[in-house]
Image 1 (cartoon, rainbow, N blue to C red):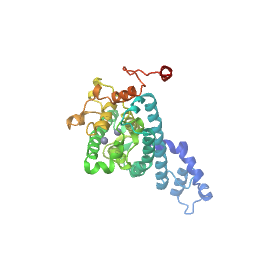
Image 2: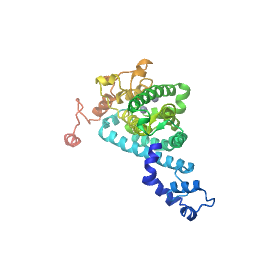
Image 3: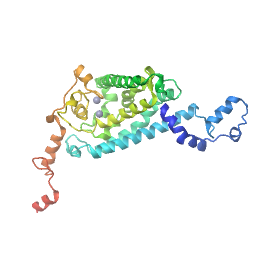
Image 4: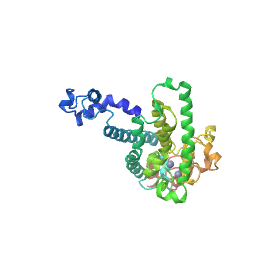
Amino acid sequence: MDAALELLDPLVLDKAYAYFVPASPVQVQGGFSNGTAASAVSANQSYGSAWPRDNILRQCISILVVTQIGATLLYLVFSALSYYFVFDRRLEYHPRFLKNQVRQEIISSIKAVPWINIMTLPFFLAEVRGKSLLYTRVEDYGWAWLGVSAILFTIWNDFTIYWIHRLEHHPLIYKHIHKPHHKWIVPTPWAALAFHPVDGYVQSLPYHVFVFICPVQKYLYLILFGLVQIWTIFIHDGDMISDHWLEKYINSPAHHTLHHLYFNVNYGQYFTWADSYFNSHRPPRPELDPLLEALRVMREKGLVDEKGNPISQNKKGKKDE
Ligand SMILES: [Zn+2]
Ligand SMILES: [Zn+2]
């Protein structure tokens, strides 16, 4: 968030605050009531607004606006790309696919975003106010650390998100927090943020906490942070790429599809090592593909032939006449 505000303050936020909360004429002329040098510096940083960049209220509002727009845009753009270009829409014929499911997933996601952002505000505010271990100059820790910190970030997330997710499946917790996300037995990419807000928040805690215990270059963190969000969308695309050698190690969409179908398997985030080590791994097999069931329904409805090829509805209509 540190990096995001640093980019957006000069680009748009300074102008917005100058417009909505303009500096008083006295401030603009530099003639502060107390006339101290510190005030003059503060006015200098305010760019025509009564609220300088380090005003805590301004920082809170900026963070909430930026996260709201950023998270919503990221969700809409990447979910749409995934839904229209990757997701196999024949899955919508699966018997467990709900009526109006896509609509419900989108509404649930859009509703969760502001609450998750509000809960996350203290972390972002602390980052912006310099309380985290985010740093700017790569040279401070060296280029090697850049790579090491990215690896540590991934391992840390993988381990902690695995356990948070697994604990959320404990019967005492499940029905209060995680159940809404399992409403989708055959999810679409639009389910990526369709969580109870507390669920979305606790699953994001690891990467917010990370920058307070380990130094990370702030632009690298911005990229890693964005990638986590995109990955969450990606694993909901329902694609069963089976028998690829990488599938042994990567928690693919196929794994997460099985998590939604079979519930207590494949809790992981990026990789399968935690699931394998803690005995919850279920490897994707072609025969587990929910598409098979969807195609069976489509065949019954006369939409596809025995081989799964679409039957032209015009031709079929003529034959019936
Ligand atoms: Zn789950
Ligand atoms: Zn899911």
